[in-house]
View 1 (spheres, one colour):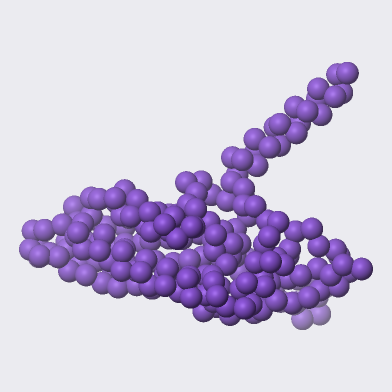
View 2 (cartoon, rainbow, N blue to C red; view 1 turned 30 degrees about the vertical axis):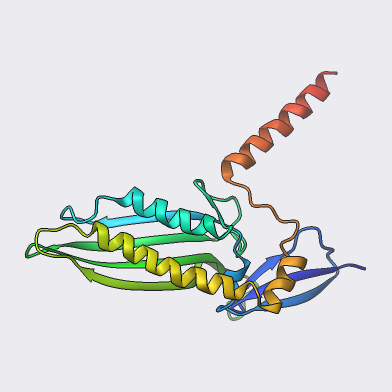
Amino acid sequence: MMKKVLLVVLMVLLVPCAGMGEEDYTWLTVSRTKGVGLMESAYLLVNDDVSGGCWTNIQAVKDRIRYRLESEGISVSQEEFLITTPKNPIIVFSVFGDRFVGRCGASYRLEVLVPAASSSWGTGSKVNVAIRGLMPLWVNSGRLTSAVDAKANGQLINSADSLMDSLLADVLSSRKDKMVVNAKKQCFKEFHPMTFREYEEKLKAHQSKLNNKSKK
């Protein structure tokens, strides 16, 4: 009899391991502070909510974040994954700001997002209400103000670098955690993230193969 192993992050995130049986469950618990150690790839998003001509090097900032991630062995996808897990989370760098009295004021935030779900049973009802979405596994933020009549480009790329220092320090430290090492061996060894496009291409190839067989 094989056991199904479930990974629990923050006590609310459940990730079933591929290839396991359906009889019993073994629970692996990884704390929030160590969860980033599971990350091996990521879908990167950069949100620009800045006006006043304050931020114009958005692609350079995105490239810098991507470079920092891939330098530590975390591959970055340009497309959204079909399934998001702690092994392949969504990383979002968001900036909000405007120009006030000649100066650019902005707040910025870096988040590592993973799926989350909560559920409840209505009183006297057999209907289970489930709410699913994304929650931050890791988050850090800051604020900046530019010089008069200046852009915030240089400050933002430096701020992104600083946030990446913090994130990658936590990633490298968490990779040594015993529960993280165990989770990688038992839960994610056979899981290979796939984008929506790759999934559709795989489906088309499978359907084409079936069609060819039916014609024989």
